[in-house]
Image (cartoon, rainbow, N blue to C red; front, side):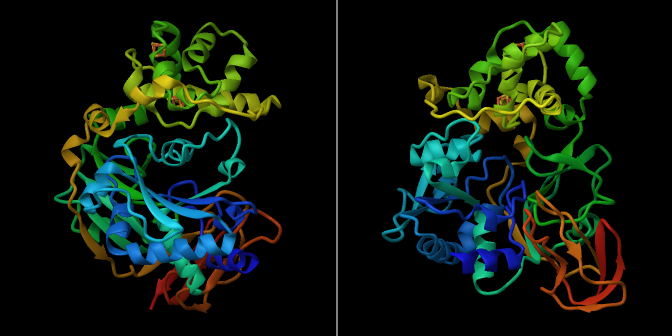
Length: 438
Ligand code: SF4
Ligand code: SF4
């Protein structure tokens, strides 16, 4: 296992599904199941689907090898029913003794790893604990693809991502890390309309970016062009102060936010309506506020549940920060029992896309393109959770694709970053390495 962990670290593999957690750290002892999160539960995204469709053998073989090396009992690929339909898989497929596909509903947030473990493996991760506490390690589909490359000595130099929204079609592209987002759009012939914003990530949990300055990183999952009048964008542009004032004046105590909260339904001690009410009353109730530690920021409370347009999840980010500032830490649970009503309170994806105003952008078909590298890539030094590494090149150096340009810090949560093109280092700063492609 040590050899594999070192290969993964050297190749710079991090969670490609958003958070960017260095993958080698996840490979612990006593893993029973390697669970591949290929649910892509955010609407509009097609990246995992592309990999499942075109690279299934590579993913399945890599999973079998991974299961063997870490000494797990099984490897499971979790996909949505809809994805299974599109792949022509009528029933969950058993690939080998160790590797299988299992299905989960067309619901949000089926890709929350805690929810996925429950729905696909029937195991409850106690609140505040990691999946490994129930013998599970979760990797995203593209992360598994990058592990397969790492096993062959290939570093993470490119990213697969979805480009969709107010475009003529949906694209899945492969692009060099550090490529400017503006170059991606230009290459695809896309002009961002004035009445739209660009999201990096899904409509629920993604963030608005400036397409003129942003670049593709190891965690860029998608670039979505969404009209500003949609609820999707309006919620993201709402000021935190507005959320606060709305909560004090408008919360009717209906507790829909609690009844619909996926983490509450998992049996975690989070009751969003109580937190909102205490905040409105400016009451100090640490026990209730500590529920915010169990919030995944999935956004169900603000998008689906609340009839008063309050954004409990945004308030909870501030609550969490305040608690930590005051030295209050989360207390992990020993056991969790999901609530029975969980079965009928899941949010169907169809309902979600209607609510968000993005239904018109939903397309099952997509076009795949591998983009030529731009003249220059700007590769950020920090692309993962943890400590950024040390830049080991300087202006004027000649580099080749796959060469280490930022070396992982020793004995830290850190990983390597590699050049995504062959060329000359044009400039180096604390934030990024700019390379002019040959
Ligand atoms: S964002 Fe809202 S619904 Fe989601 S876990 Fe947090 S409180 Fe619950
Ligand atoms: S759903 Fe909205 S109005 Fe109802 S209790 Fe929660 S925050 Fe208050």
